[in-house]
Image (cartoon, rainbow, N blue to C red; front, side, top):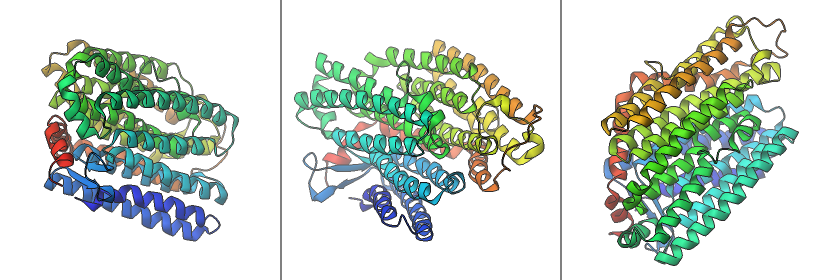
Length: 492
């Protein structure tokens, strides 16, 4: 039993409470935020290394054995997502100090941010499907508060859409949880895997699996359940936009992978065509939506919808290679898209708008920004030697190896559209002439996390092999559900 598993939840939760108590002491808050962030990073990296060396880890809260107590479980997949979340969260926190205007805004933002971080980490670690619902609710409430905290009309409207999505998904989630509990009499995911397997093709089990696809697809913005994402991403404070696209919509992806590689293993073939069809539609519709936008954050938001389609394509292959490619795609896309959203925030601070026609001359104003933005564009567009090239190469290779020619063709066509709208955005912002001078000078502190993430995307391209190997190892672990079950239900 590893006590490390509880720390990624307790540390940010305790930090959030402490920040509320220190809301009138800015220096003390900065110290707490810095130390807590470093501690969470150290714990999450240590946990991933421990899992990689010793196998899947479990923790019995209160000493209660599964399936009666709440179990926390860490495998390679959840460990990878914890570390990815750390990278993006630390960059977003640093960025927020220069992005937010007043100390009152920072005090509220950072407390809510750490609640959000705790809920995200809890989603990746819980071994109980009802507690996954609880963690989702913590994430949703935190995002809603962070989205609307500045009180702008656009943000309030996006908040209404977000809370509507949340209420709908929560209701569907509870119906699905109730249905599976009525059938199996347990909510522990490892125990569910054991008890569902003999009845995998029962109509109720298939119906519950479909409900879960709806619930988690809504949270991941899978077509046609993406309606909330463009407004929320484009309206949210920029550090939250980076978190939303970089890691938070991946929580829904994580949940679908978890249930289909653990609980509904025998239904993979039954839902394969359905998931691949949704993936192709999501890729195409998201790209078409991005092409039509003039607001940079909305371009990036629709791009996130499209990129989720790529990830679901890898999931839909239901192979070790396909899932490994999907996991590597999650890592690369999270870093790239967070960098691009933070870059968009730099522009918003300079000119007060995200309309690309109002921008220009960034090549002259800041060659460094232009370079970082170009790295993000080339990475997401799949240009070598960036990590974006390897994330798409691995996915397409897995599709060709599995003879999934139509999804691969759609992915290749959509990649061309992706490169088109991203290069067009870069040209408008960095190369086009703009007679109006920026309202505010470029803040170099905002450039630091943009550059860190952009360069990390580049490094991931040059040194992709070990990360791809780790993603494939996580995939092999997912396709060996007995390892997870034994870690939870076996000798404890």
